[in-house]
Length: 330
Image 1 (tube, rainbow, N blue to C red):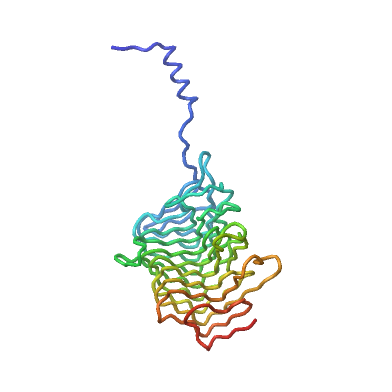
Image 2 (cartoon, rainbow, N blue to C red; image 1 turned 135 degrees about the horizontal axis):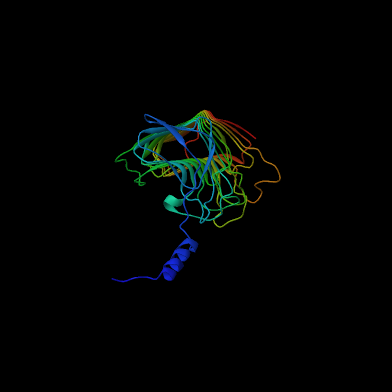
């Protein structure tokens, strides 16, 4: 039988104690569990994703979860995410603080509240500062719902209600729905990313097969105030390779917004009864000719733009579908 001397054993022990140890996730978040309700106990911080178990409701009870970078590496993924096929998140504030400006892809992209492959609701939340500072990384979505596939087919559609939320100072998109999802995005306030020199941001986006309604929201648009090739544009609402979408009764504003509502290669897109306003000053958006209220290209022939009020745009409308009952003022 092999033996080991006491001195060697002591040396091995000391080495093991001094050797770098794997970093452990740090979270101060605790919850009270009652049936299928998980209620946040207090304001807290986390450096990893908080998962909502299948069929549970996360009730923030008015408290805040703040994402921070771990001791080693950087924060990746969503701050709050579903774990199963159904989830609900309500009465919660989600923030990020001082995150490193490091770009990630796929599941590691930064999000505030994310549903992936899940139905449910995201209601009465505040989502703020989901960004990496003055970053151009294509991530940092305030609220994101997504479900494969992303080719416009609908084998197992998920349905999500996104209502009465406030989303501020995100990085790429305030509220985004992509893939095989039906969404009702209503009665939200979505501000600007406030990053005109760093990223072409969008306040609300439906894309890659997503369909549904964007109604009764207050939306502040974005501007890309940097010369680029091609010349990118930022938006208030972007509909891209989506299904049928109704955009009704929204108040859209913004200082130097590039495009109010942009709809490209989608199904029937109806833009009706919206107020679409752009303000401008000499400090913003002087590098390009954008300033378009609504731009349509490649959508279904049934799409239409009716009974909207446009003000302050270089061009109120580009593309097919403009009806004469819109009101346009300089």
